[in-house]
Length: 204
Image 1 (cartoon, rainbow, N blue to C red):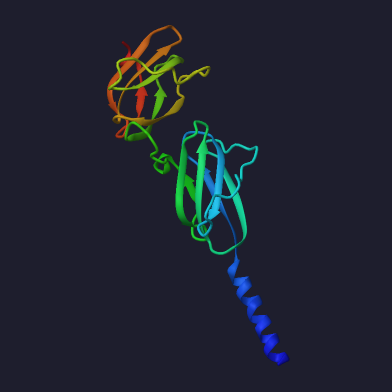
Image 2 (image 1 turned 180 degrees about the horizontal axis):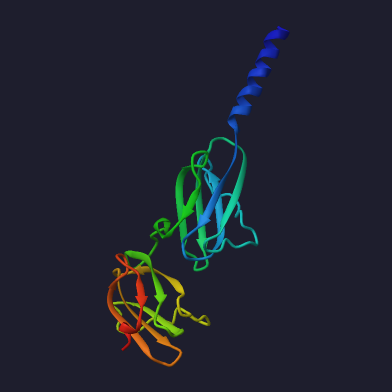
């Protein structure tokens, strides 16, 4: 009788250890073009999201964070991120034992977005003059969007990546204004096919 109870106890311990058998980690890289303020990593067997793993930290664009998990029922996780604009990115059923995660705009949740195109354009300044203002507007707009440089300057030889979301198409009009107030305008550029190198040939 004692041997049977001992064997049963050992079996229960073995089963219990298998229920929560996975310890590991995942490295999440933010390549969305936006800073991420909230990040949730939850085992697929849970019915809700775990607590935000970032806490008071921010996962800035281009940065990577390692998230450790312990005593999980499996290595398959659902992951959700929320950026500075409140937009979310969700990846379902990722086996973190096999691969890490690089978040991009391809992971953006559709939500109530008004357009279908998400992407970016790299703009390089080869004009010989510093650029103080840069406007990137979809061709379907009748006016220019806000200056994407803000307080920054696109110095000669430098490149900036401009990310766009929820646009009607991939075709954009781009205007730059340099330190002397001269403008450079490119009309009808399909940014899904090529980036832009501004030169004096583009001078208005």
